[in-house]
Amino acid sequence: MSLETFGPVLLVGAGKMGGAMLEGWLKRGLPPASLTVLDPAPSPEITALAADRGFHLNPAGTTTPPLVVILAVKPQVMADVLAEVAPRIPDTAAVVSVAAGKTIADLGRQFPDCQPIIRTIPNTPAAIGRGITVCVANGLVSSGQRDAATALLEAGGEVSWIDDEGMMDAVTAVSGSGPAYVFLLAECMAEAGVAAGLPAELAARLAGATVSGAGELLRTSDLDAATLRKNVTSPGGTTEAALRVLMGDDGLPEKMTEAVAAATRRGKELAG
Image (cartoon, rainbow, N blue to C red; front, top):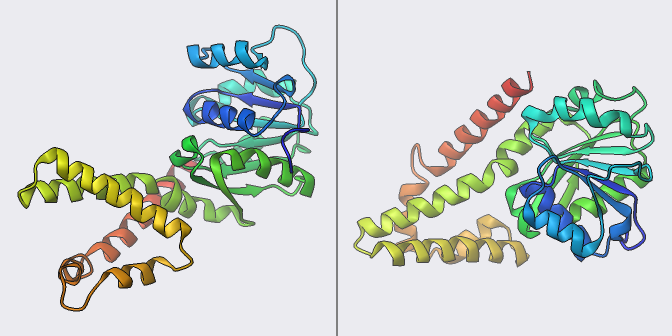
């Protein structure tokens, strides 16, 4: 679905994630006149972008009822924001939330029973168009509304749909929290490089470039991660020596399984 003839869209919250989505939509051709942004304290960058591109920012009067609403506010203020904004949203509009931990049932309490609602879990690389967003919808969301949500969310990268909302805590544990695991890997590689005798700046540069380069190779290759790993590992070589440590008893595979399980449990606790 092309964004060039798309709209009207209401974006609630133009912080880091919402602002990144907004810029992505405009780059992909979303007509500024069809876009309304509500944010109580917009950044100077968003204010300047509104003046330059001509989308509606915190309009005083009424605007065309939106077809899609994107909720990009922090989970802890979602209820207060919706108490103010929900009456302005028609019950035919698809409401798309990018707030972590807010279930479809949580969101539904703020809307009529007939409201189409989509819950999503993006991750921070979406800010540069390289993320992945997983979506689940209630039974009121039409195929056309799914397509519209996909078109908007693809501004942040890949989009995938699931049918079981119960999987969302595990999704959060893998892809939502996952960038932090990768950043930690880069940190640990750099620190290990220093311990092996490298200057700190060089070790950090090597670690960062290696992690980002390997990620790009994984993204563009037809091979899976296990095959790519094996391709780097020469029998009896340095990589094999390192992997014996990382993949040994209580090594990275076991620790990662424990970490994802812990994040999944915490997600369930936060969702109540």
